[in-house]
Length: 358
Length: 183
Image (cartoon, rainbow over all chains, first blue to last red; front, side, top):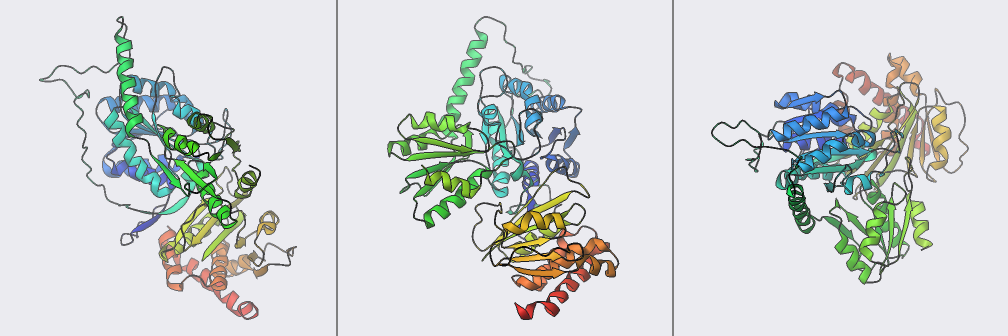
């Protein structure tokens, strides 16, 4: 729970789930629909309280399908709208996400990944990388994917997610894992009062009632010959622009490194500890941490591959981002992998052993 | 200074609250802190543990594999975590519920009859706070003022604040009477 007596302090101790919820409120999100699932329930619970405090709408939907389609409706009407879930629930939302992209509607979807496949269990995992970065639903599309690795960054990226969604009229996925959702860290910038956030982006396309103007039509069905192809070309131009402008990553100790660890989210924190430990032993290790998983920072990996660096990709799955690193390295740098799935978390000692055996 | 702590016991012993107060106190001391619960379907009666790191440096990995200190409230938790404790680490045992001696010879053991003390105070639920008091006194890495501020800010039941404070004080007293001199 949020310490309510804490007004004078600059920082509060807060879970990742709660930080994401508060960020949404501060970003002017006025509509949340969701269906409960561990390990993201604190986010749903937080939104139920804060939405009623700030005059927004909170709906516990009857299913994940209903939730994503409620978000579709709210977004079409011009609201900043979001939903959240964990892996099995996100699979259920894929049809709705595809429709959002087809209709060019902004929305923020939070996925606190748990271990699969199927219902799996509630332990942390990164098994949804492919699903998140390759579209996930049917059709030929992409969603921006942001992957925070701390509570503070989760807060900041959640606000960014709403801005990017509106800017490109495309859904944005905030991709965390169970650990990030449950972890508590001190966070700055938290305010207890509603902020009265004013949207910078005007939405002349929204269906707000067409008195004194032509009706706006929002649809993803284009039956007339050639029209869908033109629509797809338009979407692809937008994706190309996102790839050009929105790549974000963090690079640490890469300059003199012989081995570059590539990791995101919680695993990147473990890898940061590994970099520090390995360097104390005199092994030159660096870290590249993609913050946007799509668009993926191909450029920096490619540049480091030109310098004959070796790469060790670490994930909480059996090798998904690995494929992007290989694509980026274009065969110029050796790429190896270590991962654990099903709730297993790669341990510092295991990674150091992999580095020593490289 | 970096202190890595594992708190463990059964669900209902207030392990999560214990960890949150530790982390919160660290934050009040303007240190970096992380707190991760072993979240799960475990409810009252199951096992529960959480990991807390308090550091003057930026905390890279929030996971604790080798703790500097372990606060252990029941026997299954002792069996699970005693071998992970760092050499010369501090093991805080709830001796009301743990009659077994630890196998380790290279650690310091602080035995506190926390459940008995809590029961004497009138509520065995505050055994976690007795352990917390013992931890604070033994480690002496926090100011007493901040400990009690953290207690006020984390506990969301004001009517139980006074007995919790009393429990922390009893835990502190237990350490100052028995342990501090010979360590």
